Image (cartoon, rainbow, N blue to C red; front, side, top):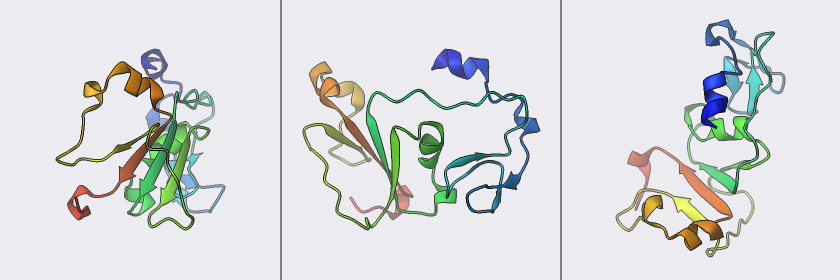
Length: 137
């Protein structure tokens, strides 16, 4: 990934223009947070996306997508990332044995504190994308 970022396949960011999203018609620069599409890509820029991630990522949005940071993952790795709005419209079940939730709390465990076998068992990473000041622990 480091080599990919150093290669800058997106080209000169100054060349990216504010354009209408082909999905919704709203003008954006770089990407549309609602449709999760690249927008305004300059000619000559390589088409880019991240390789499939080693696990499934679920981004749970509680705020406006245009203010969210997790939407970027869905733009760059659409095959591996699902964005869900909270509250969920449909029931979602996660397997506690293979799922980790990224959320700051007094009982949270840092990823570097997990044993290798715990990391190997992870298949899904749930990221709560919310303003931390609005969360209830």
